[in-house]
Image (tube, rainbow, N blue to C red):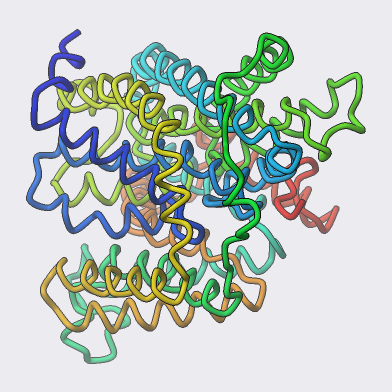
Length: 493
């Protein structure tokens, strides 16, 4: 109740509204998504209170999951990566004249799953925090290792390439001043690099600028015949509800569980949900031809996963995916370190964010369907106008962090590098996650060795650390033996 009261304060309510609205917009626009959106908004949160900042950024995150379904259904172009699966059946429904039903079940399913996910977050976070408060540096280091391994194992493309990107991310995180010795590391005599690389500039370049370059190259244009169709009948029929009830329920559970796993998130949750529904269906051959279960399940799963992803972040200080890594960076900018004591030392922030997520899901349900005509008009803006405008916003956002031209250079180089890497089959998400976790992993590793007088045995004599590292080693072994990604989590449908 205190969290709801805090979330309903005018300033926090305002930022909840702005976050969900911007999130929906970023989800609708192809090629943006929550990563670039949160990276762009990071500078704006510097002047806000930590509570308002988290409410705003969280609203952007789960708002993107709502908006991503719009372009997937209407244009067969996923507005957000987690909505790729929605294209398979959602766009087929639109071509059959059932765009309204697809959009409607996506909105209602997202609301039900999003609210269910928040309930799970509220109930599970406190018990998890009570357990993790007993963790020490060896346990946290091993958990971060497991997070890196799992994320790289489910990345698109080669697992070896994903591992290379993670190593590169660690190397970039070491640039600057050594926290123990005070010596410069990897600065090559540059004064600009002594303070390290700015997270927001790197993230904007890797995810925002590189995505713009790829979209400019592909020249994705809206399909006029689809956008001219009159959309009607947003409310699903009773038959639609009967067919969707099971997928929504299962999607909520699958999404929440997947979101809590390091390396999981909305993307994996939507694919797992789709695969599950197809396996359980009495008519699996209908999937991909316009069945409503193929929309209800994944759209529920990706929204529920956003809530589940907050559990490891807030209770252990470990991001389960790259977006959570950016939120971790946002908290650290405000001098707040998430972890087991977060629910004690900053319980006002925690419960205010929980309360805002209840309110935000209601806002999104109210906003999503009525604003679809507006989003359709926005999608008619040519990419030759829209993409350069977004690129300009990237430049302004990067510069405004420290008012330093060097950050723009970092963003530009990261954007070009991200474009080249992605075109070469290298996934940049592991790089960003390793960059954020690098300093914390280093500190935990050093503290663990100090505790053991320099002996590495501390990582195998402490049960939790040993089991966690064993799981990480097992995952690497399985990937090495099979030479492919984990079955059922392929992202290139």
